[in-house]
Image 1 (cartoon, rainbow, N blue to C red):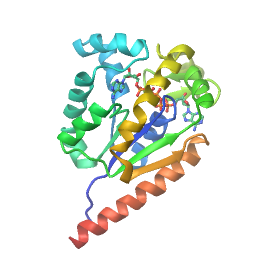
Image 2: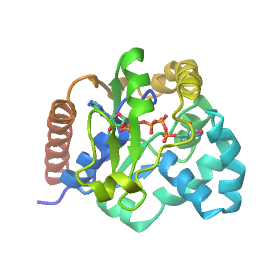
Image 3: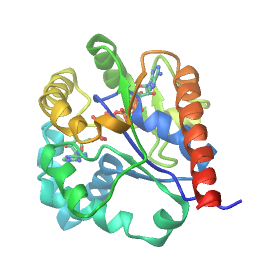
Length: 222
Ligand code: AP5
């Protein structure tokens, strides 16, 4: 049977586990993962014009101006693979203006997932986070240590993962969260993200599998 591809948005505070859950979602559902944080870090690493503009905002733990991020997301969403396989938007929209931009482009997700994690856990997760620049995989010093010494030796720390910058990112998140989520209140699914990553994923999995089944029904009856 044919089915419309899934369109998923995932949000939550810094270090709530968005990237970690997206790795699992992509493996199971084959959606195109569009993370504005990852895209921006790639631009910074490549030293592009966008990267040079974004760098100061990111390193300070602030938001990159809406215009920069929005045109980047629009370009990525319009590529054929996202239309064919469905998409998983991570870290966007992050402000009311960004949510309004998506509305104007008539881009709406099937579901808006919010990972809910208490503040005290978030700080620990951020400060211990390590990234593998070769595979892009996310690790944590305590919770998810690297599999080999070789990987361990090449892990990097994000410049915005200091305690001070995490607090600033968290406060910006809280200032915007209600305005952004009000755009999606009828399709919001809040998930307790403070549990083990496999348990969190189980909830996401049953949600997405249900959605997928509903889409098959709609397509085949319409
Ligand atoms: P972005 O990269 O999106 O940062 P963020 O929202 O702060 O989220 P994080 O990447 O910090 O966390 P995450 O939720 O993905 O958690 P993760 O899975 O890694 O954005 C970075 C910056 O880019 C922004 O500050 C801004 O400057 C700019 N930007 C991006 N989008 C923008 C936009 N739309 N507009 C303007 N500016 C924008 O997990 C964190 C750690 O916890 C890891 O170590 C992981 O191993 C561990 N962990 C994960 N899950 C669990 C678990 N269940 N149990 C224990 N540990 C866990």
